[in-house]
Length: 216
Image (cartoon, rainbow, N blue to C red):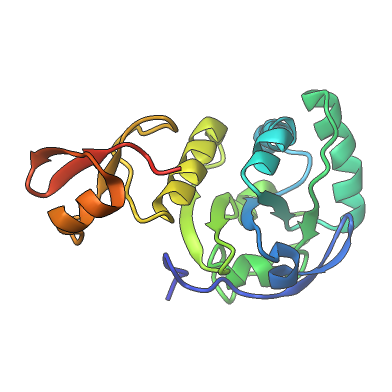
């Protein structure tokens, strides 16, 4: 059974290029995003980790910690960070988990339980380790997405999704293509009277589709 939305994510202890972490303790009271990568020193992943580094201020504004995971070791991570920082022209201050034993990749259902990495492996052997997991302060999985090796991840969308998740934690939903500042949707489970009391004015498009200004 794969990891599903609202499941509590696996807790684990692992080595990173910044020392040992226990995942739930590392998350603490923050939101967290785990970015997985099939191998260090690969072209698409280098551009992606560069994008993560460039968004450091955006993650901080949203009270969100970011962490990478790759099936290579700590020393490779430290060397790869140099390439990432050269490409991004900014420090890569987030940790990268060394998942050489595949424990994290398997726990998050990115690789089957029986998977192993052969000597002389290529990124193709761990190609499915290309996922994004957004995790709430309650340690529950809020969103996941998986990309193929040839398509770089859209970090504008990851930020937008994080904004939508943080907004929805206030008791609303977000429409298609929503970005901060736009109106939000009142859930159908909220009566008109309760919606009036909670949100004030709202627009009724259909009885089941009502929009209101986003709560602060």
